Image (tube, rainbow, N blue to C red):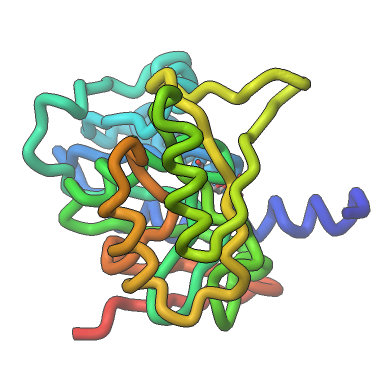
Length: 232
Ligand code: A5P
């Protein structure tokens, strides 16, 4: 990507983030997502706190927790909460039926718990993430290490080809001490069915297919904000 394209994409991420932050109200418990798009929202929330907004927050990853703390956002322990008022997170792919692939940054398990706890789960993206069918982006799955080969074999039975994720020539380890395998299922015609099948595999802690978890997607595209809402 050229410098100009990357600046344009950052501008779109920022615009979507600013739009999402408008939905945050005083006294909300806010779920903070992970990744470059969510970071724009976190920085904006910190700015609003400086201007008098009163919120507490939970983080979907260690990186986000560190960023939020460094910006002075008051944090809560997600493990002690039964609900989150609103969460703002990014995605790696989405369809207009509000199905997502997440986990490009490896935070999918905490992101999924956060989305499940959220009364309103807003996804913010630039236009590059919109697809007709999920699956060009490989589906990240988080695996407890001792179940690695078992899960790879099970995923293979679902016609998925998994590759163990590495970073800097070392196995990538999640915030929860587990592995990530990125699985190529080809284009996914029925994400609900695949998500359900993956849910049945022991040792697979979480997968990056998010079905029915997003309430709203805010996409910024060429200076326009486009909103996709959950069908009622
Ligand atoms: C983190 O694990 C992911 O789910 C992110 O939400 C996703 O990768 C989007 O990241 P960017 O906003 O950096 O594209």
